[in-house]
Amino acid sequence: MRKFVVVLGLLALACGGSPSGSAPPTIDVFAAASLTDAFKAIGGSFHGASARFNFAGTPTLVTQIEQGAHADVFASADTTNMDKLKADGFVSGEPKVFAHNQLEIVVGASNPKGITSLSDLARPGVIYISAAPTVPAGKYAAQALAKAGVTVHPRSLETDVKSVVSKIELGEADAGIVYTTDVKAAGTKVTGVQIPDAYNVVATYPIVVVKGTGNATAASAFIDYVLSAEGQAKLASFGFQ
Picture 1 (tube, rainbow, N blue to C red):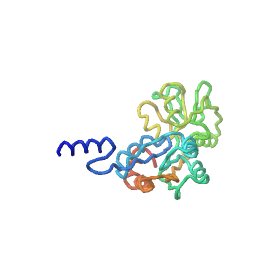
Picture 2 (picture 1 turned 60 degrees about the vertical axis):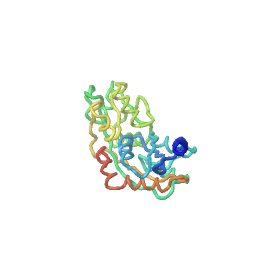
Picture 3 (picture 1 turned 120 degrees about the vertical axis):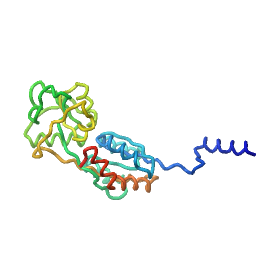
Picture 4 (picture 1 turned 45 degrees about the horizontal axis):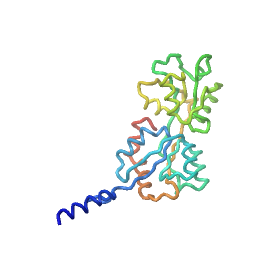
């Protein structure tokens, strides 16, 4: 009889069962690339479900969701893309703002071109790159340059801010405009040059449950955790406002 019980237990484990009870649900969280490090930390301390993340440029995530990719939660780096997803009928409930961010010029670790301001990005010999204009960071960067009266043509347009930072780290470009949180996340691999408040742009981050989720309770619980004092403290530790 004992052997029979052991065999049944092994069969249950093979089929995904657990002697101690059912496993927590898994939710798919689609989040802007700039949230990568902060949301990984939040996911590690959230106990309501197992969070599986998909990080990419915000418009890429919107396209994926609208083309049928499974997502339970969507966190955007701007309100424009969130408004589009809402207008197209892909959200459940009202989006909630959970964080803000600002821009910073990112350069190589030793700032070899001696860049100190937005106007320096237009100097001859400076290779400037940006996130694409459809990506929130790229749109914000263009707004900051316009405020400063600086005209500069990016050598390349990247799909998200992480790609901009990566090219700066590798020395493939001299400077880019990303979020302050991206500069902080890169550590000693890059240097940040502050942009004065008069030219800076504040990024607003909303989050929402995606319509059609099969895990509405867990998805809502994740959003509640992001908005909680603990979740906000974790975001602040990564430089979010």
